[in-house]
Image (cartoon, rainbow, N blue to C red; front, top):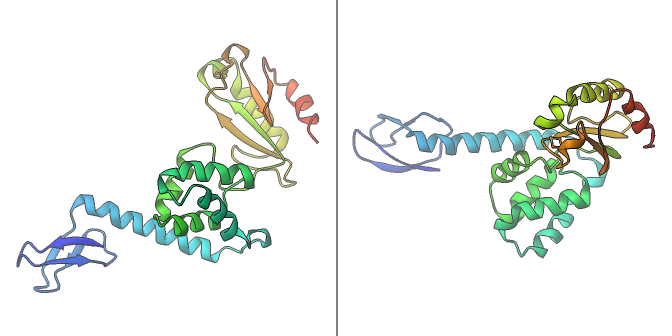
Length: 215
Ligand code: FES
């Protein structure tokens, strides 16, 4: 909803239509241009509608049936405070391993904030995953120091061995691959972690042996 003013007859009304750029004045039928700052409201609404319809067409896995309860317990712990959104998401990510779209919908509903806001937070921070992660999570450092020491070669080797891209999980659910920007041990680059175990000074032939340690 956006408050508009007709430049022709000065009539003011709350526009609830879907057009992003022009609205028709209900009084004189004059075409009223929607100001730039209001356009973003319509975009957000449109994205939210698209997101909701996408979610409703997806098949719900059985394990997501108690999702409202899971979300409610965490939100209750944070006293329904929308300013704690990131902490709530972090807690759910930790407990659940990933953030299904149904979970984002519940958070939006229970915190009474737009779904767009929840979705934006999850896509902004790398800590959040919107798809299930594998049993073992491999993180490859692509920070400058690791890059100049051959991080790309290590990344290519991992992608090649597992036949997946960054952000994906192997079909057997065993490994997920992610990249990070620095792990704080630049002198040991190129560096990767598997489930938090550090491996540094890597050469391409080392990768296979490391992966074989995780079953
Ligand atoms: S750049 Fe890779 S650990 Fe710092």
